Structures are given as structure tokens and as C-alpha cells.
Length: 240
Length: 318
Image (cartoon, rainbow over all chains, first blue to last red; front, top):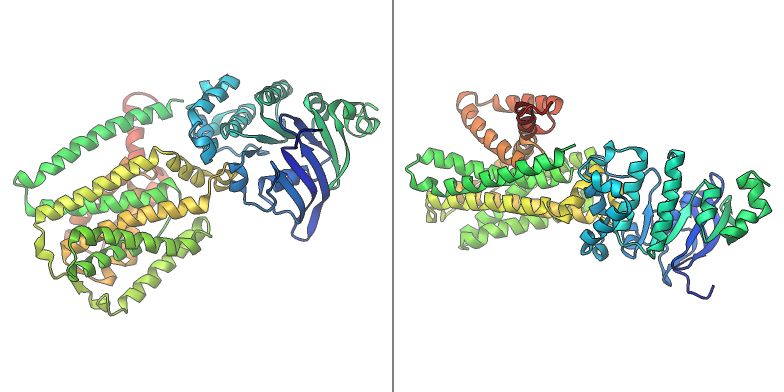
């Protein structure tokens, strides 16, 4: 790829105390791409995202965003550069309204001035949230909360939006809608790094993907290549 | 769900009430009201100030502190000693706020590493340590306190207006904070500090900031108090019971709201006035019982109780 990558992860190693779970993961995400990390439970996908977000310090390796080394930077500094994670389990503020949750997404100085324009964009993408903007976030269904969490991520003018299992616990119909929304977001020039267990769905919308197993990158390719790979079909799609 | 629009209408009414109340309070010294009533109002304004200040940290941000007497005392002593040193009260009282804010940073830097009940417990320790140190310093007059030399320079009306001005300032500051992105971030810290950090809020820094703001207002109130009473001593202004009083008022009135701390301070001052006359030892018992009742039945305090009653009267369900 000739374009300079937006995000470069190079030889990343992460440990929880003495227990090392990531043993050298490398991948790149180019501007405007949808890139997915796929792998079984315990492969280190969530840990990788947490390391990029600054929530876990890497033991070794580099995390570069626009060429700047972010490894070991605290979370709020990473957020300020436009690297935003939609957390697994949605972590909204249940006793605050939908609109307050969204506005908090625009707290970083780079986004604060544009909060009200961004709010309009989020409501255009998720009309449901507009109708419920005065409702307490904790009183919505799981799918609605997921939309709210994604909307909150968009409020921060993200350059790189990272999703950790966004389809977790959603009804099948909502999963389709969710993947359609992610594609819509990518069309608005937001680069996406997607961690998912719904491999077939994910490879449909991803430009490129990496297969992680036991903390290492074992395979990579375009979405199409991975869909057609015998290894992926056998291990992840159950079709080979 | 119409909770938010309803509370917005309620708060609009509250602002109208506040503006009218301010006009009425401005007129008080001119309408031939008794000196004792003016004194009661003045005390209430000081408690309104500390109550609103404490509410910013304890109510809005959810960091319960048992150590606000430290700031009240620092403000009182800074102002008192400065006035004795010949400095005008107009500089000495704000200086009390500044010293209290500085003290809050020294206290906050270590204690905000702790969360929830651990922070609350740490502030109890800090309060006691500061009180004991202050009781043993020469500059504070030790346990016997300090008398202010030039206290006669203000008339009672001037003291009254100083207290009213400070309370109005605390009200305006609280209103501004609660309607700003800063206030939204403080509430997010209260509700889920980790989620707040995820969106780029820096909980530690914002806690230090709101702590300093609350300490400054509390210190200014302490300064006005010192100038008015013309006598301060460490076992009074730095005492643990001052800290619990400052905490009780917003809890009784309703945490996290603008009207709650004002109502709480007014109720406390009036009840205090009656109780101290008739049952000098029992007023703390009454507050203890009141606190338990409020925590059990109406965590929203008197403001929450009022909202609930108003909804019921309008026939809008429970």
C-alpha cells in the first residue's frame, strides 16, 4: 500500500503482570480503511485495542499513529489525537440522558467546539437516538445502547474508531443494521479498526483483516482473500 | 420520560425565585427588621455558600469530603490575621479564598489517588491533623484563638451584604459549572470514572480543579465569618463538627442540584437557631436521625421530596 498508514502496530507485546498475552503483533491501518482483527477468545484482540487506547502499557513494540509513537501514553492523550474506542459492554452513563452521553463524547478539546454540529450528524445517522435524547441511557435496550455508544464515539471527531465486539448480545436483525451503520461511518472518512467474532459478517465489510491466535498474527489479507482462504473457512467460517 | 424537560422548567422557576429573593434580601437592612433576624440571615448566607461549594465536589462530582472545615478555617485565619496586619477586608477575605484553594491542592494531590469511601476516610484524617496542628501553632493563638482588632470597621449591614454577595457568587459559580461541559464531565466522573477517562476526561485533574473551586468559596465564607464574629479559634473553625455541618446541609437539601444546598442551608440555620436555644446538646442527634431518614427514604433530599410531591399534586403519578 502506497499511502502512509494511519496506525502502525509493530511487534506489540503486552503482559498482565507476569502473564504475557501478546507476543509480537504487527499490523497497519491505512486512512479510510476498515480493518478487522479476527481470532478465537483469548487471542489478544481486546488486549491489543486496550494497548492502543493507552489503557494498558505495552511491554515491547511500537504503536504509531500518524507516525507519532503512542505506546505508553495515557488514555486521555490518545483520545485527544482522535483515536477512539467504542468499549465492549458499552460503558454508557446509565443515569445520564442520551444527549448528555453524546455530548460527553465531544469533551476532548479538538471536538468541543463542534459538539453541536456533530450532534446533528449523529442524529442523522441514528434517528432513533434523536427521538430518545432526553431518555436516561440506562433505560434503553441493548441495541439502542450500542448505537448510543457508537454515536458517542463519533462525537469526538474520530480519525480512527475502534470497535470491540459491537455485535455482542444483539438480536440478529440488529446485527445486520449495525454492520450497515459501520459501513456508513467508514464512508464519512472515518478509519475503522474492528474486533469481531461474527467473522462472515465482518469479512464482508472489511477491506483487510488479520487473524490473531495466542497473541500472534498468523495470517493477513484483504477481506476477500480471507473469506476465500481455506484456513479461515475451516477454522472460523465452518464451511471448508 | 419527561424527567429532563420537567426539571428544566423547575429550574427556570427556581431562577426567577432566586432573582426575586436576591432583591428582597438586598432590601432587608432597610425595612426595620431586627438585628437578630439580620444576623440569622447572614449566617444562613455563609452556610448557603459552603453548602453550594461542598455540593460541587460531593454532589455533582460524587467525592464525599469530611474535610471542608480545613478550608473554612484557612479562609477565616488568613482573613483574620491579614485584617489584624492592617490589610483591608476587601483584600483579606479574597486572600482567604486563595489560601484555601492552595491548601485544597496539597490535600487533593495525595487523597484523590483514593476512590469512594477511602477518599472520604482520608479527608477525616486530614481534617483532624490540620485541627491539631492549628491548635498548637502560635500564629493561630493556639487553643485560645485570635481576636480581630479592627472588626468595628464594618457596620452590620456591610457584613450582611458581604455574606449575601458571597452566597450570590457561590450560586452563580454553581450555575455556571452545572451548565457547562466541565459540569457534565464532573457528573460523568460521579457516575463512572473509568468511562469518563475513556472519552478523554482527566478525572484526577478535574477533581483537583473542582476541589480548589469549592475550597476557594468555602475559604471566602470563612473569611467573612471571621471578620463578622471578630473572634476565631481552631476548635471552632477547624473542628470536625464544622466539617459535618458543611456536609449535612447539601445532603439534607438534595445533592447535585442547585436549589437543594440552598434549601438545606436555610433549614439547617433555622433549626439550629431553635435547637441551640432549647436543646443545646441534642441538635446533632436530630441531624443524625434526619440524615438516616433521608438516606433511607429520599436520597434526593428535600429538593427531591419537593419534586416528588409536586409531581403527585399535578397528578403525574408517583
